[in-house]
Length: 190
Image (tube, rainbow, N blue to C red):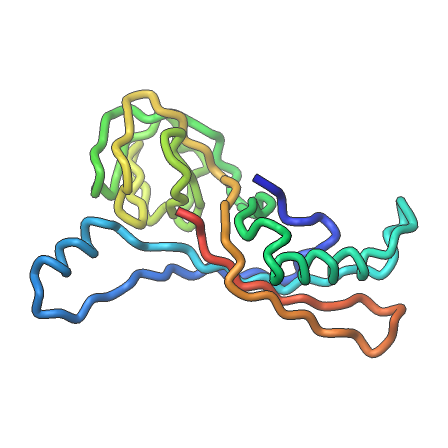
């Protein structure tokens, strides 16, 4: 899996939950959509690229434009890992119980510094979850669990997001000496 290029300096980020809704008379379709647990995180990034890399002397603007064109043209894989952007001070921990698909809470070995809004993953799958509430050692999270979790399974806070680029736009600056701006829209890869 490739990494999001480091010459894109993230200036602003927005993460929103995207939960599909179903309007249907078919109970089978409604059940199927609910069973699939199709929630994804949508991530919007505003980035700038400084013109010249001070360490190497390379032209970052040209590299950034070539990467964007390659992404749009299909010569660069569309699935990659964003840098860790979490703000949590929580230490990675392990689970104290077994939970099954569809659950929304779990007991953790250590919840010191865990706060509402922290992102985390379980070792058994890549889906990213958000902490909604904490009570003693029990963490309530969103969305519903997409896969069973074992006793003692590792829990990682500030996880990497594996994403697919939905849209990439660039905006040239008024001067070649000024940083170039890019806006990216990503969806979580499941």
